[in-house]
Picture (cartoon, rainbow, N blue to C red):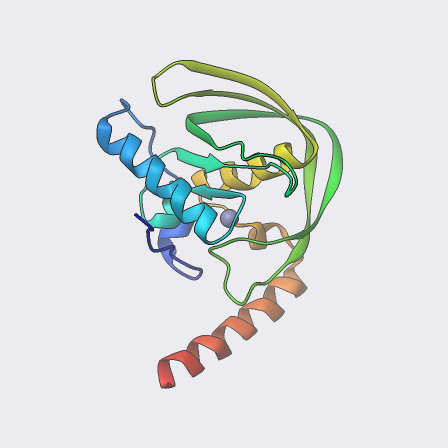
Length: 172
Ligand code: ZN
């Protein structure tokens, strides 16, 4: 089932998420729906708060267009960031309206510990694009959007565009 994706400035996107105590069938169904929603959007990652669920669950597929799909579901992920600062160019987000994109500084390596949908531990070292996607999705679980990581000037300009857009939308 394709779920509704909530968008900035919805305050639910700025709340830190709660751990998943135990992986139930409900969580497995939510993860399947989130993957379907992500592919339909289309996007490369989706975190539970983006569909209005305040829990530490995310899905992603950082495969390149010419690669076969690599769907991932991660429960209660913990990230340790390493390596140099790298510029994630023209980052975007399914929850950031107007298809806004901006460059964001990220780290080149992410050491991931999480659980899969069977409750098994996952340990991975990610680099490059998968590491960037993981950092973006993990931020969602902390209540952080990529627009929280851009310059104050860019953010102000973006917010005024969103305000105008919301006004037009509500008027129409
Ligand atoms: Zn996002």
